[in-house]
Every structure is written in structure tokens, then in C-alpha cells.
Image 1 (cartoon, rainbow, N blue to C red):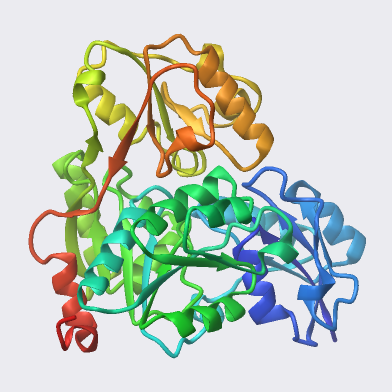
Image 2: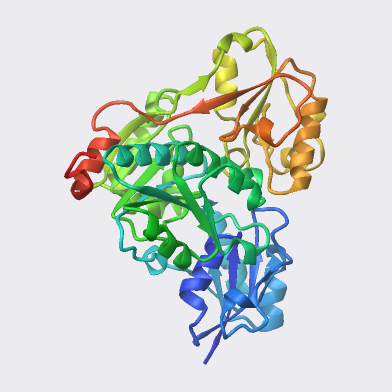
Length: 444
């Protein structure tokens, strides 16, 4: 019997699961993908050029809201959950919905979809969006480069456009961001690595990407997205935790899975978190991953000239996903504005336009900060209009990219950067040396 399948996704893990688990398996027939979390990624087709001989017409992608009608209309046997950063209870709500309408519901084991590399792999993952993976990835790359190792980063997928053009993407200079028509969300992840001299790979087919990365690297650093598990089997699994959200490490899918598998568990942002929350996170690590090495880290914010903030009315622009499905009320931008004596944090709500205004309705937990949404040209335009209308003296943006490269602003703007910093013993480098001794056997 051939089982009819729907893959629930968000343009990333879903395609990878299809490629390595379902694509050429005659036991299954994938009827459709459903899409959630990311705007305007539905109503596409996973193209026949990528879907294999069992799918000569490709596989349609529907909004997740159509899940029940798809199950009923196609008499679907199985729904496969294939996206990340969901509360455990929400995963079970989705499971209940599928099962109530006659379909089985599965979560594919993390190791089933991990590809094995011929090169050492260091995976940088997290228990939630916004824990500090990006700066930690840069730190890992810096440590390895100091040993004379050739390092490339492979980024968790963000294929929100033409899937055929995004099968395998390579970024080694900023011009490549334009060539591949990257969204703000993609640029935020790729630009800091490129500026640090690290080539980045991403796309849709992570088997093809792995082969290309292996040709250029001594070591591959998996740069995870959301709180998803790695696509490549890691030789060292680094997992970030955020004491501003204590308890989330045990209550989100698949972040808890990452924690249980962690070899190194980094409690980040201890410089701005309550000590009791740091201790709660530490105890949860000891409960879930007793063999993991616990590392304490800071995420200090860096601004070029703090005096430009003092006494000013400041509009803060924060990393979008950290605020939205990451669940944070604010980020480093608000912290920097407050620390450096801003006279006023300007609430963007009265000035919010289009998709930015809608985001405040969809995510009412957000504080008086502007989410840097940029999945589409329309969202970028809405962000620019919102900032243009805001009555402020300074725009302070804490996005990983230089936002002024993609927006035309009518007022002064300054960037807040944040970097990884060890906050005691053991350090990240010390734990890497213990876990990967062969990579540190000779000084580069």
C-alpha cells in the first residue's frame, strides 16, 4: 500500500525532509506541502526538476489553513511535521487536528535526515530563535581559522523565491547577495559571515550543497536556523540557550531535541539576564543533557558613538524573526538605547505601515520596537515607510546587516552590533579543543 502524505513546512526543513526521506521512496506519495510562518511562500510548486521521477508534475504548496480540506479531499494517510520553533502544545494541537480527520501524524527523528560529511562538521543550533547563533557561528569560524583550517559555513535554508534558482547558492562577496536577489532575512544571516571572510552555502538541495562545501573546506560549520536540528551529522553539536526565556529550552519543538543532543550547551546573554534565570537554565541543562559541557557567554552590544544616542528620541529597529515567532519583546537595540541614555524610545505603532502594522496585531507581545521584516519587496517598502514617518531624532537598528544598504532613510541612523564573548571557564575554544582534538593538533 502506498501512503499518501502531506508535509507541513515553512520553506526549508520541509524540502530537506522530502529530498532525503520521501522523494524516491515508493512507499509514499507526497500529495502536497503546506506552508506557514513565512509570508507569501505558499501557492508555489516544488518543481518537477527537483522532485524526482515519482513526481513529474512537481508537488504543490498550499497554505497551512487548507490542511483539513487536503486531508479530506485526498484521503491522506500521513501528515509529517517539518518545521521548527513551535511550542510543544502547538505541535500537539496540529497532531490532534490531523488525527481527528483520519491521518497519522509523525515527527521524523533528527538523525534520520542528517547527511554524513567526509569533513568534520561543527553544528551551531539553539533552543529558540534569537539565542545568538549567528555571532557564535562567527566565533567558531574564527577559532578554526586561527588553527589554519579552511572553513565554510552552510546555512539553514531560506528558499523563499524561485526554487530552481536557489538549488545551491554560494556567497563569498556582498555582490553575491544582489546576484541571488536575497531578502533582508537572508542578508542578515549571510552578510556578517561574508564580511568575516567566510564563504556561505545555502539553498534547497543540501546533498548537492554538501558536495560543493566539501570541495572548499577542511571544516564545515552548520549555521542553524530557528531551533531546528542540523541537516548534517555533527562531530560537535553546539546549542545556544537564552536565559531571558528560561524554561523555553524544555518546551519548544525541536529545541528540546537539540538540547538533549548537545555536546556543548552555551548559556548566552548572561550579562543582561537575571542570575536566577541563568541558574534555572543551567539546572534544565543538567536535567536534559547531563553530559553536555556548559559554557557561559555574553552578547555585548557595540555602537560606534554612544554620545549620538544620549538625549535623543530614538526609533529602535530589531531583528524581525527574534521578535515575531521568536517571542522576544525587544532585542539588543532597545538595550543599547536605554543603556546610552536615550531621552525617549519612540513607539513605532502610530507610524506603522502595511505588513509592519499587521505584525503588531499578529505579535502583540512586541515592545516599542520595529521588527525588521524583509521577506519581500513589499515588506521592505513598508519598513522604509514606517521609518520615514516616525517622529524621531535617530534610527538605531540592531539587525545583523547594514540596513542603510537596502533602505533609503530620511533621518540619521546608527547600527548596533553584537558579538560572542566568553564569560568564564571553560571557554568555547577550550571545549572545542576537547571535543575535536584532531583539528587542534597543530597550530596553523
